[in-house]
Structure formats: C-alpha cells, structure tokens
Length: 402
Image 1: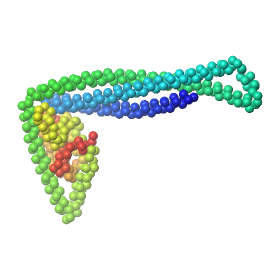
Image 2: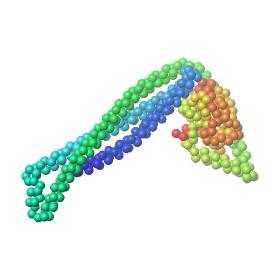
Image 3: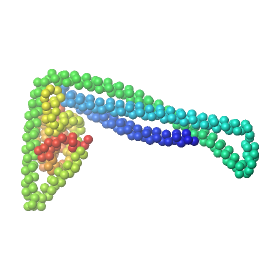
Image 4: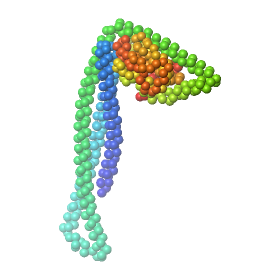
C-alpha cells in the first residue's frame, strides 16, 4: 500500500503544478487577446492614415506601432508554446511515474496471488483454521485470512485506478501536443506577417527619405505651430496663476474668496492622488513620446515634445481626463483647435480638435466629451496632449492609466 500512498502524493503535486500552469496560460491568452485587439485598432488607423496621405510620417508611425504589436503577439504565442512544452514534459514525467507505480502494484498483486495459490495447495482453509491449538489462535487465523483477502482486493482496485489515471494523462498529453502544433502553425503565419510588415516599413522609409525637402518643410511648419501653441499655453497659464493670486489675496477678506482658494488646493491634491489612474483622452496609440527624441526619418534632427502625440482616427471623440474648468478654447494653424482645462495648479491641453463641445469657463468632469479629432496639415489625425503643473511640462504617460 506504500506505492498507493506515494502515487496519491505525486498526483496531488502534479495537480497543483497544473493549476499554477493554467493561471499562466490564462494570463498569456489574455495578453494575446489584448494584442489582437490593439492590432485591429491600429490596422484601422493605418488604413485611414494611408488614405489621407500616401507615404506620410503618419503612415510610418502607424506601421511602426503595428510592427511592435505584431512582435508582442508573437511573443505571447512563443510563451504559450513554451508553457505547453513544460506541461508536456511534466505530463511525461507523471506518465513515467504512474507506469512505474502500476508495474510495482502488479508485481505485488502477482506475489499475493502466488502466495495464496501456494497456501491453498498445501492445506485448505478449514484445515488451516481447525488445526489451531486454541480458540484464540483460530480467531487470529480467520482474521488474517480476511485481511489477506481484502489486501488483494484493495490492490486490484489500486491497479484499476492507476490504469485509469495513466490513460487520462496520456489523453491530456496528446491534446497538449495538438495545441502546441496548432500554435506553432500560428506562429509561422504571424512571423510571415511580421516579415511582410518590416518589408513594407523599409519601402516606406526609403520613399520618405527621398522626400527630405518636403519633410524639412513640414517640420519647420510644425515647429512654428508648436511655438505658437507654447505661447498660447504660457499666456493662459500666466493669466490663471494671476487669477489664483488675486483669489488668495481675497481669501482673508471674504468667505467666497477663501472657499475658491480652498477648492483649488483640494482639486490639485485630488489630481495628484489620481496619478497613473487617469483615463486616456482618446483611443489610439502614442505616435510621439514626451521629451527629446530623434526624427523618425531625418538624420541628425532632434524633436522636443512637451507632451505626447496620440495617433487615432478622424472624428474620434476626445474626453477630459479629470474634473476641471475650461480655461481657454483657441485655434492653432496647422494643428486645429486647442482646449486647455485647469485642475487647480495643474493644466491639461488637448490640441488637434475639429468640433468643440465645451466653452471657456465651463466645468467639465472626468471622461466628458470635449471635442473630436481633426486631420492636421500633415494628413495625420492625432491629438497633441499635455499635462502641466503651472509652467512645468510633465510626461503624460507617467500620469495616464497603463
């Protein structure tokens, strides 16, 4: 019966490992599904951007994003394959252990049968019982015979159980092998897709490199528009800070002034408390990061971005990321409309809008629709989004929800 107990412990351990592996498999499948959803959205953006303007920087950034997502998808598939390899290896170890247990149980059972046959050949049960020298000895012999018979029955049941579990483990292993083969075929297909995307990327970059003069002209226009936008933001923030100072001076004079100042302080604190929890202002992907970075095509050119650019689709709805008051609504040539929302000491800037759904002085709430995306002068539908603490520009990706 020792073999039976060892088998039970081994099986429970294997079951525990399988449960842990299942969690990892679920997580990988969730990541894979997320990658597929992102790919679907980026494909739509890429198709629309290509229609707006062929061989553009917008098309290149969308294609770069699409390649990154394809690589993430392949990585998820590789993770699933590795996990299945591990599961199959574990199952094979279980099968080997079960086979050894089954062989041992059969050997023990054969020995029992042989001993029983040998005993019955020498003396029958009645003779064995009544040859006892005392009544107590006869009872002990009877009990021994019953236990020995039960042991043989238990051994037979144990053999049947192990045979059944062994058969099930073999079946599960074959299923996992089939899953692995399907995933390997899927991986081959996705790798082929990645190769095609990278070839398209190389062709597009080569085409854009031939348009260096036009790209430099567009870059200069963008820099002028950015400078105008920066001046607007600085002007609005200065006005708001001056207004806040006036309210502070009035704090000790009237209850209303005191309440306004306290409300602004509370709003700033609430904004800070929600760091990394803010919703994204628009659906899409980050086409340009915060800070200094190399131009995607022009060599030696560095771009400075005080926010992030989120490439999306024309007409996509833009939402306020937090409660606040609209400080300004203005138009920036080359970019479209801009909305600046104040959140105490903090400001959020939304540039690249077509339709405006709010007005200056209006209170807005988290996730409230404030406008829609326009296609800019470069043929790209994107939102230029900034977060500032007074004049200081902050990296929005450190504040938005992951």
